[in-house]
Image 1: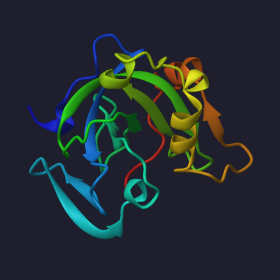
Image 2 (image 1 turned 90 degrees about the vertical axis):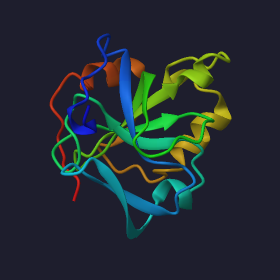
Image 3 (image 1 turned 180 degrees about the vertical axis):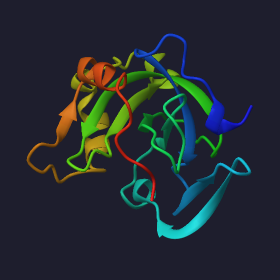
Image 4 (image 1 turned 30 degrees about the vertical axis):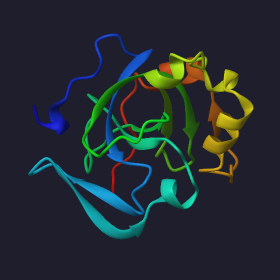
Length: 163
């Protein structure tokens, strides 16, 4: 199955299927090429790598796929997942951005299995702090929200495209 055509998790909005686009250890940003279902490095630096985020970045399956409108997701996990891997996760929050390019937050099964609650508002202090370091500047109209807000927002249409 092509990654761009992967269906949304049957139990969403609580559970989502994440397609990893950017592994944590990749210093250069990767771009998804829907024509051949592959990922290619760019010359741009990876925000995750630069700011030391220990998770992965990707999109929510069934919401579209880059470069078309889709929902981005930050996956909190201790696993080092390669680009193109498809994983199920708990939707637990969102960073609402003023430009509409919202960043959902999902909790990997590895962290859920050790007792991390699937709600950004309930994250352990260190995990929440490291996540929020990705977007330390919060402009008016922007903000971090917990699971209930994210689960309502994910049911709407994506509001931005990859450039």
